[in-house]
Length: 278
Image 1: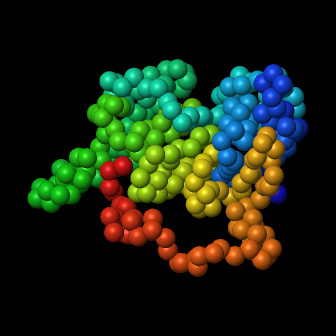
Image 2: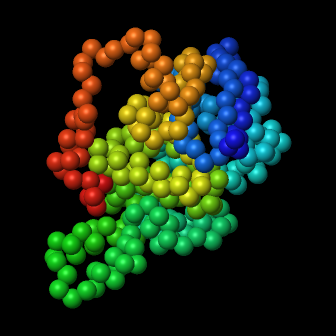
């Protein structure tokens, strides 16, 4: 049985007379990608902000890796990484300078080049060596130069690159759990797929990932389990496959025939995904 790394019991949050979260309970297991889904106003962001120690709760119990939220919030902060929808960075600083800044804030040593390499924003050792090979094809040389963003300023990055850099900053303190709040909102299909690959890679290294998203295909592709919230309550929690199978077993049928590919697949196939700037 996998270890429970987050336990939430009877969590309640009130804003005056408004009940944003109405006594929800759920577990997150170590090493999984767990999705929290729901329409705007469902209470999912409030729930995550409470677990992240960013917002106080009205009632209930929250435990993160054996740490009690009420008694050990500072200890919880040391083992989590939080990537918000909008993150403020000094736009004129280089990426390496920003990582050095965050390293100082975390009081944790970090290798800026290594952190950028984790999120595919600089060259691997093999690519750096290849860049200096005599007779290197001009197109390949340009691709490698474009990939290396280590000397770039944050304001010079594309949307997808900014999201990947934001995730890099959440990994500086080597967290056991990272929280990603709608990380692919506004990205084109190529950038979304590249970010999916990055999230899977982070999980493969043993980090637990909690994600919110409004993209159902994203949740289906990435998440081991999802909890669907509505009006402050969890109305279903299971794996995406199990939820889909349960719906089909009710006799539900889509009005349009499901094809083996969709328009996003066509777009990726025609425009190419590998090593494209995002």
